[in-house]
Image 1 (cartoon, rainbow, N blue to C red):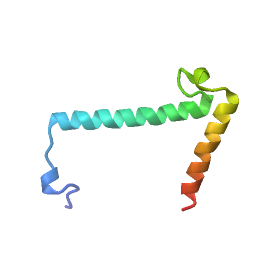
Image 2 (cartoon, rainbow, N blue to C red):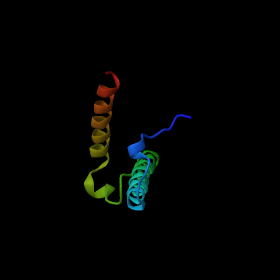
Image 3 (cartoon, helix red, strand yellow):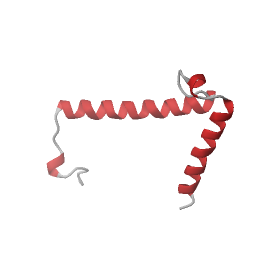
Image 4 (cartoon, rainbow, N blue to C red):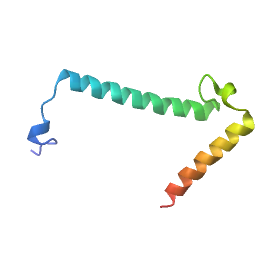
Length: 73
């Protein structure tokens, strides 16, 4: 049987596990928030205070251009 973790990494503490679970939960909550933003077109509670529809359209286009530049690599 092949062990997944090397011997020195097989043991942990509750504290380390709690930090890992909290980190993973926060990361996945961020992913869910991104999906919600894509669905409803709103970015947080202060959406209207940051910019108008044109500002958000330009902002999304800049992000998409950056993502596309890395996709083609």
